Image 1 (cartoon, helix red, strand yellow):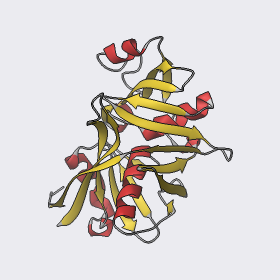
Image 2 (cartoon, helix red, strand yellow; image 1 turned 30 degrees about the vertical axis):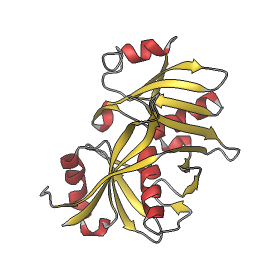
Image 3 (cartoon, one colour; image 1 turned 90 degrees about the horizontal axis):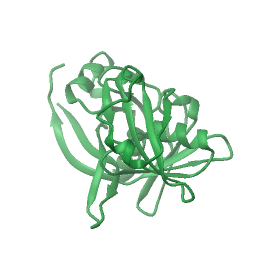
Length: 232
C-alpha cells in the first residue's frame, strides 16, 4: 500500500470568497514504493490530469504522468508537489523533474515554481475577442480536436487579466481545469505578467523573468490523504 495525497492546485475564489476551481492532483511522496513499470497504469487508474511520484524527498527528484504519458515538466503538478513537500517539512528550494532544475518559493499564501517555456508542450494559442466566447465553447474548437490548445481572451488587457480554457487530448485529458505549462507558454508569448482565470474559476499568476524562465504560482488545498492499493 502506498500513501496518496490528493490536492487541488491553482484554487480561485468566487464573489463570496469561497474556494472554487483548482486542478486535482495525485502525489505519492513514497514514490519508490511504486515501480516505474507500474506508474503509467497507476496514473491511468487514478484518472487525474497528472500524478506525481517523488523518488527522492531530499533532492526533490520526481516524475510526472498523465493518464496517457510521462511528462518532463508540468505546472500544476510541480506547484502542488512543492506546496506539499514544504508543508511536510522538506525545506527545498529546487525541484528536479526530468526537464531540469525548477526553483520553488512561497509568499503570501501562494506557492511558485519557475520553468522554461521550451520545457512545456507546444500548445496552440487561439485568441478570441470576448471572455464570453471562451466560456461558450462546447469543447475544443474546430480544427483542434486532436492537438493541445489554449483558447483565451482578455478580461482586462491593461491589468493583464485573461480568461482561458485549455484542451489537451494528446495527453489523454479532454479539458484541463488549470494548466501551468500553458500559462508559462502564454506569458512568454505575450511577454508580460498575467493573471489567468481558467476552467470553472482556477487562478494562475504567470510572470516572465529576465533569465528566460517564467514563474507561475497559485493557491493549493489538500483534498484528502489515503492509502492507495490499486492493482494496475
